[in-house]
Image (cartoon, rainbow, N blue to C red; front, top):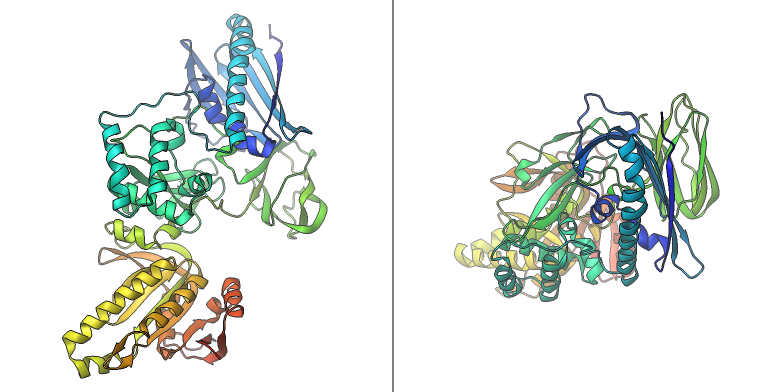
Length: 606
């Protein structure tokens, strides 16, 4: 006969507020590992299970266990729940729900509920021992430990696992303390990184994001990323290129080299094909080198809320059912979609937005409007579709702690340290929008004629070095030189403008035969593609072509910007706070005949 479910309810009062505790408490993969849940293995299925369902198997106390897991449901940062239906083992069904309720003192009252249904006599006897006693004790220890880390506002380095370094690793780590700063790494960041190698557990270091560590260490993000790159070149770390699915944003393709990237990727979970894009789907992460220590990538739980941190709320709705929730949002764009159906409903969050929003999924699909809600709106979602649906409410912006592929290949430090990294010949990958700068020396032909080839060439090489240093300081990267010209790219147009202005000013301090050196400069902003040319990463596309032609309209005492670069909000702010003479300029660009191309001339002074 069927058994009745056994119910447990555990409660803890913690000092950290829910939004600070959430990244730790809702990381169920780490939690299951820390509380003694065995490692699991996903079971492949011939057909995709509906609504993100998964199957897995594990072994505990010598008993084989298999289950089908329904999707996690959650609402950040207040609750998460999941149900597993067992095909094999002592349990028939297991459901859990964790509630994080803020307290008047600023902490969290955490309630954890368990519904465990035995499948047989072993389950009936084992549930009170395994769940009622052992898990109750280990769960409490884990949450209290997480609370300590959250209250201290430090990264979760280690919980319950000892660190096992490989033979000789400690001597190598000691040598890195001197080696990395001598190679240009920041000494303080180097020390913190080495402490992490010694103290952090395997799960923590399996996927290291430099910007997360920079925020924890209160260090400059770019300087931290450069230190990670230097540490990789020295052999302390390895980097990895993760190609993320645009829907679930989980890595579906991972490679240690750029040449290993494939142009097309398939996500089995979302059942979609997508193209690799450095700006939107490629993230660069780091892990310890194999000569130092192990980094754990084993799975203890599938579908954790923190595995998809861009999903703020996820819930199942039966036909005709509704769900109302109140998320905590930032100013920006969001969307509601279902796991199985095409399309979505876009929403915006703004301080002046509506306090309540209603979203309906009908047989005709989604509404085309894009309503604006407040930063804490009450959102009501109704499923008018004929089948049960898994709804996801997610932010559209990338997490600002992610180092994108587009960002790292536009770093001079990366190109200097990893010049061998290149795409496979013939492959082209979008890098999103870049600010492209072309410069050239004014009257360089006359310079060669008047002072001779060898002296003129020396001056040209000297100016390359000056430009490179200034552009690197402005967070740009010098891509190549063409005769006396330079091509460089920047992630932000304002950095490109600042770099060009600084380069012109610095070169005008130099005189050759009594005359100052004038640097012509043109800047365009738009989409680019990355390719491999002559064994090096290069950038191509109409944006590059237009920038190369804009430079010819510069006199060396001004800078020519395309309308796309000029209209950038940061560029506009920079222009308005500096003493520039600005005028619109008519340009005719070869190869762009018939297109309206607006450009702007900027000159310092009045």
